[in-house]
Length: 163
Image (cartoon, rainbow, N blue to C red):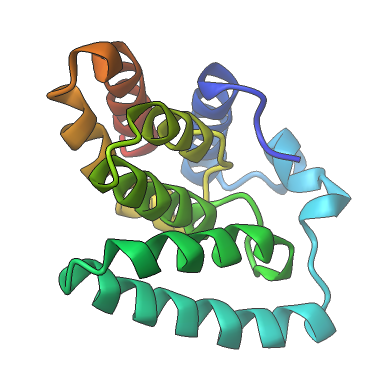
């Protein structure tokens, strides 16, 4: 349902910015016409409550450095992304970033790299284009030699999302 790679995500971000600049409804970005991204009210309301709660608890766990709890919370957020008001967008990016940070703290660099790469496979939304993609995991992985290339690719994508 999301972009197949970071190049497709970057192209979607450029298309999104062009649409915002001209506000032409006939030139709606292709990904915004995908019916799988439309979530009905019966799913969206519980999703908002669940995801807001998970986000709050995750921020607390991250600040308290409770990495063992952060991973399962992030996995739950990822598994329930279909309930999101904006599936495969900013919440998905944040959840994979948190999961990657937890994996990195546990010493699992390969899993952290996989999380970074998956967190890049998101569609642009008002949050990710205003505030940018989450870069905490990429900055941590920049310091790891085997992860440097993936981190640089992600940081380049993050720049494209926040023009």
